[in-house]
Length: 357
Image (tube, rainbow, N blue to C red; front, side, top):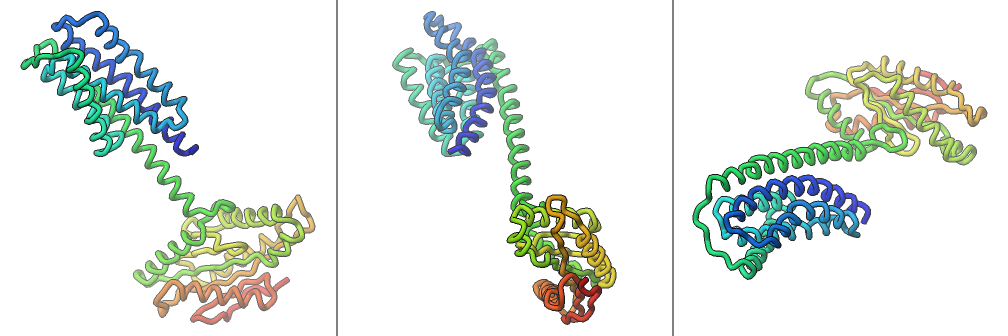
């Protein structure tokens, strides 16, 4: 309900601007067509009400409605209906009538597509019918030069204004789409890539390594005894540890490296074009810095990392196999004492950089 209301208010604000401009310009067009017909004073009053008062009344009506989006669609049908009435009142003068009908049709298409165009057309036809009953017009087959010039501002300025509004809306929608895409790929707690987005990047890196015949490494990082941290110090402390590790990854990795949260207390890093020994040294430096990190809220809290590293293997046919190598190395690090970096090459965990402290 709140989402629909926000969307409706946004639509009402956009249409308030276009309706105010369009009806003000339309007043010039309709007045020039009506003046030679010498209409009754009440017709001029209704015309001024439609052009000057109605835009503000329609906006307030939509803004205060329970469902502003639906209220604004109703207002657009009222616009179409009144437009049909004025077409009949103008004695079907060709250019003013065509201008009125086409501008409203353009507005309806921009707001609701073909379906709303059809609904607006029905409302216009009903308006024409009511106008026929009120004014009993006779067809005027020509448009005077004055009436032509009076139509030009509406023909030129209103499409420009509507196009600008649509352009601004497209810009807003594009920005929101990018923001939603970023949110869908980002872990909310750490700000790193989430599991799915990181695996997508792993597939891209695997394909690049195969295509360019270049190496690289990936790392799986596990916070040792993280469940104990949560149970002993609370989940708030656990969240702080996770955020600290993500912050450390952002600060210490290269610009080309890609870090993500694999899930729970596990993190993952892609290290493009980095030999295994260099990758191991970088991960060991990370492990060392993280182990010496102090926590003001809980000075007794001690943390450490187990890290499994795997080099790109040209024999692998799938990125999942590369990830499995890193997973095996991580398993080896966790089962042989933790707080260490284990490297895997040729599919076997075989290189231990640091023993547990």
